[in-house]
Image (spheres, one colour):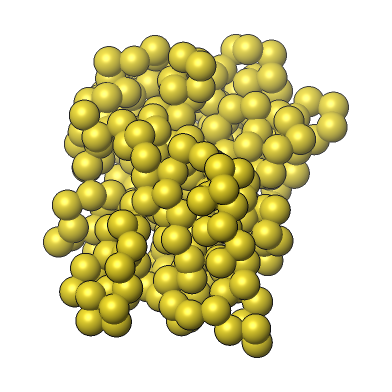
Length: 306
């Protein structure tokens, strides 16, 4: 069965292998609430809360969070907290890292550290998952946080990362829309050239596990009516499951527009490292953070079965 909501995603991970979080810089109300709710909903079996112990205990006390279910690792400096959180995963004490109340760059520096990090040689990228009102499916989005100006080769990796999660969600052949400002190839618009080449690579069997079409504008990627009106006849047109944006600006704006304008539920995680990393904006709600924990757990459970 294909997962079509965060409710179904949570039910899926509840029946899978339990995971333990390692939270880098945990002293934040939304971060602690997300971890607590993930524990209560059996998304995780436990967590290491790495950060300023005094602040963690004070915040948790105000929120009635039972800290006896978790282990606190006192690291006052944020860089040290990130390093310690990643080491816990590297040493096998925790299953998954989570970015807490800290800049993404600081958390990723620890993730990619040559000594104790979780780098693999694969492209490290961000994959977002959105449940948008009015649609019968969820959307995967890449990349809104990591890859600034992806090359053609990096876009292949972005598609692979999203496809991996789509498969974990039960979608055996996800439809991938390579988004551009227009749906026709224009030599003056490099993104359209990449989109056409990605489509060719998919048709030639060089990109597998999904169906790719580009260039597609946003309207004819997700609206059957818009695709029909513009005369675009392709299985992906109007039915996209995965949205690949041309650069980080487009991805970030689309991601946050869906959250603040469409009021969608969303999640995000980092793919390409040895373990998925829970990663959301510091401004994201505790619900979004809990959804992100569930997404990373799903990716980890799926990878463990391969």
